[in-house]
Length: 155
Image (cartoon, one colour):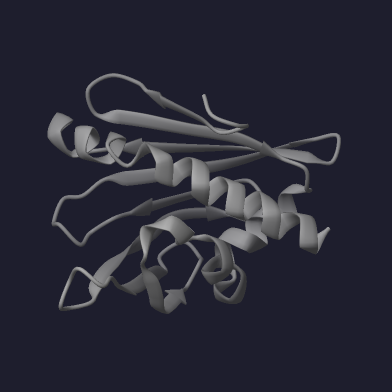
């Protein structure tokens, strides 16, 4: 565990990231669902990437599309998927479809005493895909620290 973000592997194909934020659930939910907020914290600053576009249609049956550039890659990288479940301020489930049969992400928001515990659960299609994500463990710590900083400006 580094800082307040906890990254745990659960079995061969599952990863769980947990952090408690000092903000109510509706504000944390907005940071995940409003493009103008999402783009301010999602990309780890140390990654050298730029978020070129951010389309979020956060509703059950809606979708998302994120396009990034990176100095090491000649073409932009595109990530996209669909929201299979959205319960405002409580839960979101989405697919990651860019690699065909990608991972499924479940995000929950648990508010208590004005703080919100966020639990992000990812189920990967293979052990190798989960292993590859764990190599980027630092990104979760940095992203959630960036989210924490943004939330401090919104409350």
